Image 1 (cartoon, rainbow, N blue to C red):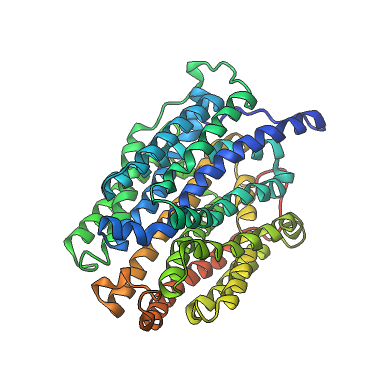
Image 2: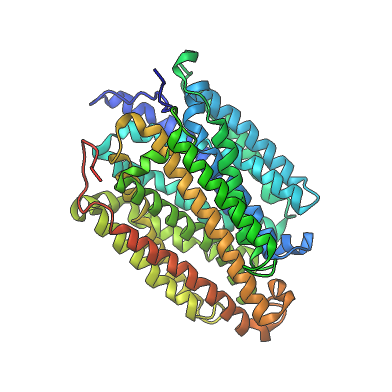
Length: 498
């Protein structure tokens, strides 16, 4: 009989207060790993303009420094369930940390944008394992009745790390070389390695026959499909538009490979890389799509905002990073109440209201001047953080409640992959949009224009970014529509039916 790829993580005995307290140091160690991996998603965002200048490439190319990292995470995450069962959680955690640190060092010593993008892929493959291990252990320990409350706490590192990344990046960019955007992660990773060795429990023995085979064919098809589609997106602005051969070939190859993967995953007897059969449950599909749109909204906005404040507002890197903090503050303020809100109003109403609030607050960025209306934009971002803070935990808990408990490992991989894939798609899409808008208004040199250097360009720059922010608003509207397919009431116990 083929074994499920879900890791065998034991939850504390019911009513065992001692066991629950034992999870605190383990959870803190796991969270530190998730934080350093997530910091890497946006710590480079304030340096995008500098990297474009250093390597003499357009924004649509340099955005791959972010997109390649997110894409590598999205592709590697589905392997987590199999790898945890095959090697054990602690062993996998330590090995992944080594790969992540190697990627950091390679990025820090990169001499070309291609080398830097390749190093970010290595970094992403290593960092991909941290979140699924943490999420799976906490989801199983919590059980369905406490899932929303516990997963709200998981959202703290998921949301705060990307938000504070630009602040850290701003300090580094204003005081040190761009390479410190990657050297910065090394001491944190070493600290995490020490804590993991001392605190994480030793892996129990695992029998070889109890592990399902790795989906090698899926591992070849799915990454290539996603890379092809994202390459097509990134070439839209610089490759001559949708009619350009490079764009059509990239989209065509990506689409064919994606269809091939779907056929393979449906016919495969064992456990595919991403088990698309989980999506037969309507509520799991809505949960995954909601997670995808959350990732697109958060990471896409994190790509745009530093450029917006630096180029259109004329702020330095540190100030631009600091101006992103209100979104994280808003999320932290609302997270303790998310569980109670869902218990009273249900996931559908809470996620719908949160996405609607995020959409309305984004309108300010399509209309206001970052230099003159900074206070209003900060307030809008705080409100946006409150809205987004209510969306992810209910979506995730709905997904877990809609599948059988033995599928938790595969479900957590699919849901976290959805967040990261959404982030990579959102970043690539918005990079293309803002690149095209800047080129249309300011010519080929528009991507390097700055209101700080040329004040007369402030108006055109603000308009260019304003057009791009309409796309982020559209992502939030799409999230509100998806919320309509979530359950109207939270269900603990048996999985919800579609």
